[in-house]
Image 1 (cartoon, rainbow, N blue to C red):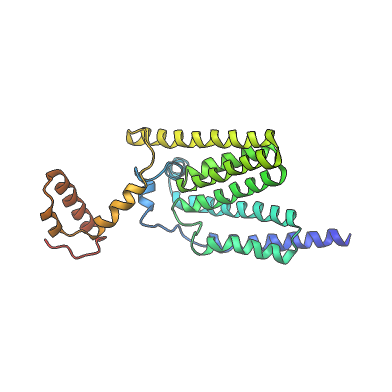
Image 2 (cartoon, one colour; image 1 turned 90 degrees about the vertical axis):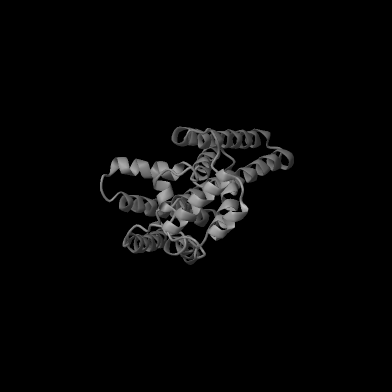
Length: 272
């Protein structure tokens, strides 16, 4: 009876922590960043998941679209935090105070750097990363098919939101090989390896298909090239065009400079 009462009290305490988080987080307006427009307009520089989510919410709601999206992101993040921390509490038999501290650690990004009310892909990537990590921990613990499927599904959605998380597939492949060699568990290691490979191939196909539908090119999302290009463009001045002979390159840079000047995002005062 005492143990049951203690459990109920602890559960109510955690519920109160999450209730405070909901009240605090939902008492905000959507936060728009310089990147928000590129997601809303299906920019070729953005991978498909978040633009498609925005499109879906625009279909569902005619008004206050981003408010409802921000609420969804908040509740999704809180749900992911709850399931992950509850698993860790149970698996490691954590006491109430360590459980609360763990919840606080995962809530901290929502109140600071990765606010769930930001209209950017990180607001969806964060809870997806937590759920992918939770499923992977369960694969490590239970070595079952159900959690393997959940892991590769969440990982697919995570990479389709932020493609740099593709490194997680490497972790899965290494773990599958480790199980096969050192644990001699051929059955589970084969499932993890094949499921991860299928998920990875599905991600590449989905990414390229999205760009084919929206941008007319069956190709991956531009990443490194745009990063190398943007910094010189940000620093360029009109006088630098004198050293460029190719008319197409010169025209491109002229248009880029004018666009930067129009949006006041150049780092230098450009001469006329």
